[in-house]
Image (tube, rainbow, N blue to C red):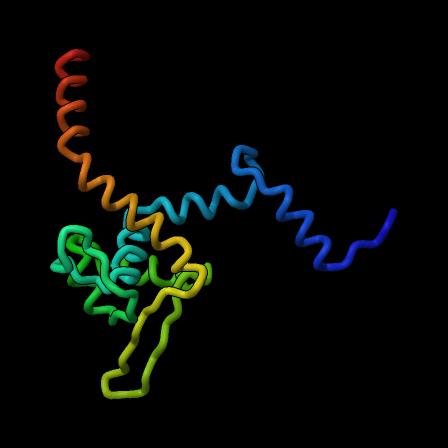
Length: 147
């Protein structure tokens, strides 16, 4: 049996990723990025977070403070926001930069990997907003048919 280098082992593992297989680690990643708070955080950081940017909401990616994200993401608890930001940092999708001030100033920013996912998340958010009326109408029609 031939010995493989670490780079060859990584390449072989990468070639074997198939999310349709139960043991594939990409399933956990899909589970993580399909979370509503992950979607909204990535969309916010990638668009500058301003909902007043016009109809497309597109702005330039910029660092945001925890309090900005908390205000922007209506309904997110402090615990959930903190846990989600930590998991995104662990996955390498965002960076956390703390500045020694009183109190400490902390900024969150998308990494290159996070930016590569941002467009998809922004599109998903936009799709949901655009088609919500249709989905609600379909649900209502279904519920009256099934009831």
